[in-house]
Length: 150
View 1 (tube, rainbow, N blue to C red):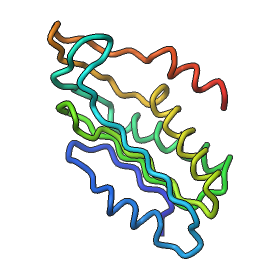
View 2 (view 1 turned 180 degrees about the vertical axis):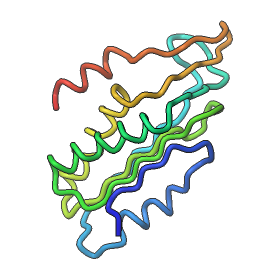
View 3 (view 1 turned 120 degrees about the horizontal axis):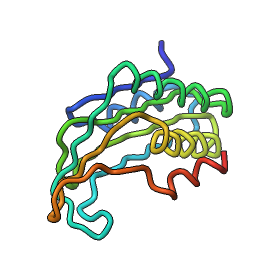
């Protein structure tokens, strides 16, 4: 049975199904799930929607590489990364990163590591539609700074 599930998809995801898969083994003592949503405000402007583009083979390889790095650093049992693409509205869930481990510290750290690298290194292109017009979103300096602690 695979220890990793990675999906890039347009449709919403089922957090409960992911939790059940991550935590179904009796050796799991901790399951950490992060879910990111499309905010209604960014850079001082009201956001109406967000459109995400990607190159499928390139994106999935980058996600697998990030997960492999986390697996080499922490003793984690299962990992799930789901990232949505296409047109999303404010309030929509955009990303899920889930990690299970025997211990919470490893699950928390691996989850945060994956999310930090996903935000800065995964090849997604985001275009916001705001009350001021449309704009492409660049990586934030704080996202890039987060990488330095790893």
